[in-house]
Length: 320
Image 1 (spheres, rainbow, N blue to C red):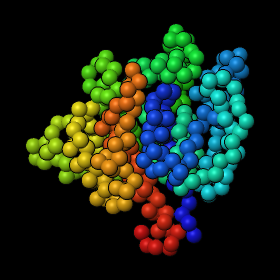
Image 2 (cartoon, rainbow, N blue to C red):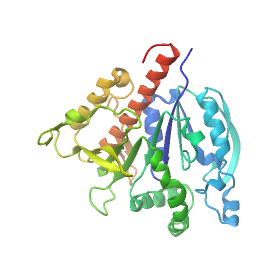
Image 3 (cartoon, rainbow, N blue to C red):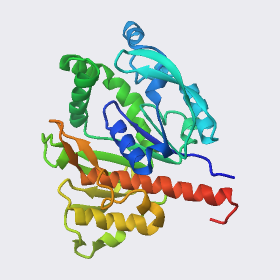
């Protein structure tokens, strides 16, 4: 029997970077191997209706959470779905799309972890938590350039949605296996290329063994890569921090650790062999490479491939 699809969840507030991360991971694994789903498509009301009702897209009552659950269960079983489509440009709904799950399914959106039934369908759960001022900057850029809003409209929307963000979006952080926070090295800095990343690794799934990065005096790779023990929401966690000025040599050292634990990871994603890893578009349209983004993509890919390995063994009746 073939193994079932592996499902990755990527949840975060509006403009937290979900789509950027989803596209990068899909590119690494091979787009022909990945089905990407956005839970924004499951809005109950269009933009005009939401404005008339005074409800935001972040509120559970504005989304068909029960259909999200049903579709996740079907995808996990390898069955097709008829997925609705919400058009962010028009604020209306387009005709639904027939979707068949491929080997890997990435589900990104606002409320993906809001119910226990939905959470039970994921193999790996990621939550994006950039600083709020940085997220606001990203949202202004995206919504003014791609969705037809003015900057004042975006700022007003952020203000109106804050209570729903606090009540419904941020609490989903508690369910994540990995919490990803990109942040500027200095307050007020807005250079996407130089963003650092803080990766909170919860013990809900087995993570790579990064402890050999440390010695008695600190990190032998230098201060741009740090592994520390911390607490998140009151519980102990490992935290891996990678600075935007990390070198390719340092990044490849981390890559070797990942490939050592999942030997076939290298055929999917090698920074040395695949220069597209960690690529993003700068503010002036140029293509930039972020090593913190590259390592984040590699780590999440590692977990997806490891989950797939387990499913293959289970399908074959092998002892894990």
